Image (cartoon, rainbow, N blue to C red; front, side):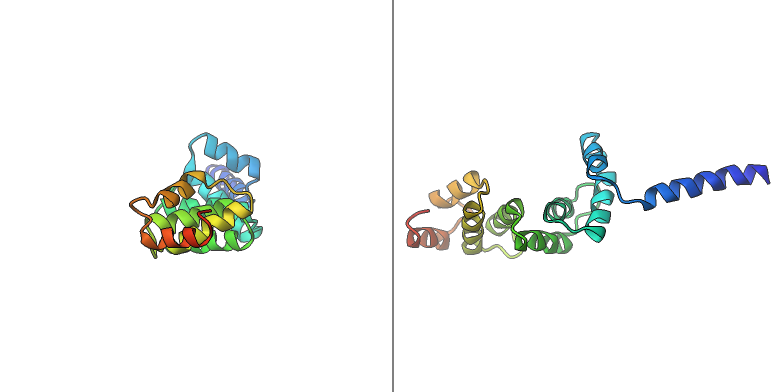
Length: 153
């Protein structure tokens, strides 16, 4: 009986510890240590318990890029859109990048709109905006027209 009790107790204590939502500091420590699986799990719990825009963005990015687990583009985009709807400029910029370079769907016109929205909110979009202004290979002619109609901004 004594041999069974110690492992059972350890399992219960481990389960109780895992059931608690990780703090921001714990999630950051997991990122810093390169433990992306733990960071991803912590962000998933945070999204479920307290879906703040930055948490939505970070977890969405992990899902889109397959960090710490398998990619889940559909859920990643949904989380990015939720963060962007709350004004999270990094999410707005990231969605612009997705629309500009990869999709789904690839939509340079929408990318330009998102970059303008991010810039108006104080977001850092210079590398992507620069590509749009130059009419880079991924930009396409619609983006040039969109920017020209707005005075090249």
